[in-house]
Image (cartoon, rainbow over all chains, first blue to last red):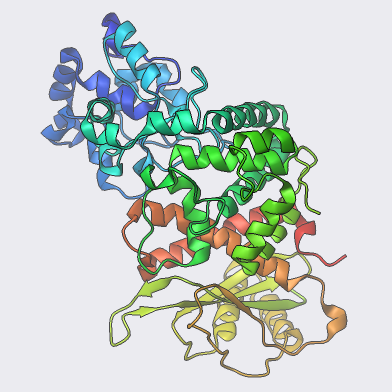
Length: 330
Length: 179
């Protein structure tokens, strides 16, 4: 193994994603020299020096934050050593936003890391669909446009964009202030869901995840009353393609929606699960009498939007029902 | 040996890219399900309106697999013959395709004796749709530019969805069985 551990910048930070760590590693002169010396032996070109993963980007459907157990590229283990084994994707992992769509970040986490390690990084926890809040700071994650999140040096590009005028124009701070109560409740729901999921047996996790995803799919369908809300026009969603069908939108939208919209969906899931009282929901929705603050109103809203969608959701919830989550259905 | 085979027809809501006059067509699928084990044993698909009997094509694959995997050729041909006799008979050779809808449609056109019905076709089709769209969303998000896919990609998607569906039926067989 290459002794890159001598350099403080090369150390893996807890919770860091593999793509972020590998890019940081490649900035170290010793690693670059090592690659320069050994690249010819593996038939790779000089492009290796930009990123360890750049050649893999040519392959479709790859997630650069994880390695497959049968990976054949020999450079990675030589540089990263046994730490690499930590990045094998677990079987029962929570639903995750695809690598190409990653764009959420916590500004405070990035800043703290910049102070302590003199480098920027992306955490893997920011890619989970059901975690729109930072687990360390309890803050709503921010979003960047897709092309910035997909950059080779994504942490640096994101941090740079965070201080740009375009970022300020999105009005993230204003949105967080306006919906402070709702976001606080949604954060509580997220913590409860994470805690409950950790207690589940392996066989129940599949049902648990699919129940949450089915609800999120229905609640995040574009065009629904629950999805449209004050300030949503400023949030960065990845737009749907032309001629997309309803079912496709249902399955893709949880991965495309911004962290703010996912947080709002979590809030309504909290109401359906009975974790948010009507009084609290009414207060969180700023006392708007037209908003859905009870389970009956939420189901009514889904039914009114599309009956087919309602019955599809009902079938899914019946199929994936688990004792851990009791959903109010009447 | 399969004793009772049930076909399930599905029309998907997205397009498949093909060359020719009609460049974008809805895929039309035919799954054949073993009603005893609740497993999907084969499938065939057509891009646009099928011009052949898809059920026959799917069964051809199943029979070919049986012949390949059986060491005793006499026995395997015997089982194939049984399969042909006891399989369901169709009302029409060609199924209708409803492409003018923007949602998946489940079609089942077949005549069979009701007392042999062991599975809920609606739940099975719903489960299939779930796995197809879940697999499709994985592939689609990698492309993320259009809702049309290539034929080869669709084939890979269907195989992936089929294996996922069979795996989940292993764990939860009660999902599609009639109580």
